[in-house]
Amino acid sequence: MVNNQVGERISAGTAGKQPREITVSLQDASVQIENHQIWSNADINVEQGEFIAVVGPNGSGKSTLFRVLLGLQPLSKGHVRVLGETPHRGNQAIGYVPQRRSFDPDVPIRGRDLVMLGLEGLNWGFAFPGPAQHRRQQLVEETMKAVEATAYADRPIGRLSGGEQQRLVLAQALVSKPRLLFLDEPLANLDLRNQITIPQLVAKLARANNATVLLVTHDINPLLPVVDRVIYIAKGKMVIGKPEEVITTSTLSRLYDAPVQVVKDINGRLFVVGLEQETAHPHEHDEH
Image (cartoon, rainbow, N blue to C red):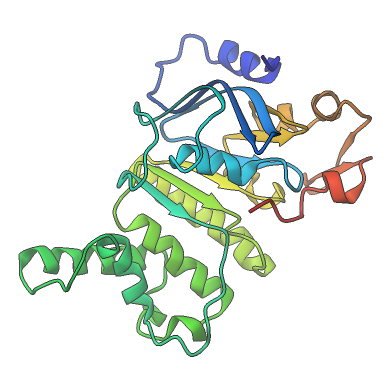
């Protein structure tokens, strides 16, 4: 099993506090795909209401973690529980934003229609007018307002900016009021302003609904003001803890089994140096 010393320190430091519900649990969990070991012996517990950043180098298995938690990828060993159950497809208690896709500029679907798919995407046929449909429309309006997207809700989604599209995709995931929110690279290709404001918006909405957030990113810095803990995946291993405990010279050197140095600038931003870019730089794209 992975020696998750960071996680052990976290547990010891919270002794005496009222325990919260465990929403995500991995116990001695391993994933192997076509004879390739993605990661192994992972022991992770995520509590209700936590905001967790999932970071690590290209191809380390961050998106694979989401596939496991969504019931799309079985473990090769160990146990996984999500909201107290074995993961399964179509869980309405989970909101999921996959890695960003581009929308064709000619796609006519409006922003509010995209958000409505978060409620009706699994239904066949048309929704008839009535109290139930009226309530769904109210939820859509409330959610768009919450993500500050009302002003462009009637514009074609393909003609919106990257930040505007991302707010509407986020609204689609939030409209069903999920207990868990999985966000896979939601900050990729966004400008600096949106890289800062969108995590703050997610954290605000998650706190309001006591929802748990797992967000995959290649840059922890925009999340530092809002994140509770970090899951770092590298070299087939996984650790969890507070950013200042996980993203350290000693912890990452142990993970990579190689000399790694973590430096902090005058603004508190963290930078990992000492590894070749193609295998360790935290800003590259994860596997598909």
